[in-house]
Length: 259
Image (cartoon, rainbow, N blue to C red; front, side):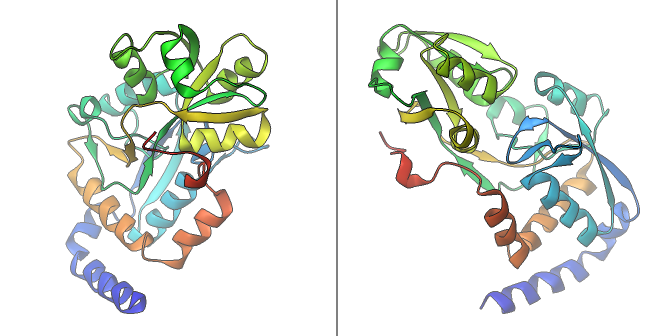
């Protein structure tokens, strides 16, 4: 059945040849956050790599355009896209209503939940952290930081927020005791748990989110090409190869998303 579906998608690709002519041979700049493993980050040589970087390279090759990856400070990345200094964002970008008001999103390709992480020797639950006046670290410019700020002092919540340049820095301050916990999505949480003595205390109680690529609203041709490329990629064996290589995120067995 999958082979039949892939064949149908390639017929769709051929049918979309006028669209592909609009992007073929062009070079588009992908703005990415270099501290968002495993979706986008720098390798030991300072070269862009990660799940989204490799996925976009595959799509570009399939759709006949070129892509150049440019590191951008995460808090400024939406502005850079709106100012046309970059053409797209493929870097673990969450779909939010606020962002959708100013940029266009492709079809979503990943879903994440928001988790509370504490020191590995902590006995505190997520409820203890969220209602006990704790200091919580969040990565600046992320959707979870915005959601935690919005939810503060609602429904019995009582905490203060500190912002960090990366998820790893926030988790490091949990380990050294400067803050009680950090709120990270399942992707970032999976990465820091590999390297630091932290664990999942439970759900952060804020909505789950989807990842998609962001595009300037005026670049409809690129948006359509990316959507078609994502459709082809998610039906290709390479999609599963990427998942095996990067193992993105905490597995559902490690937390209760409905907690």
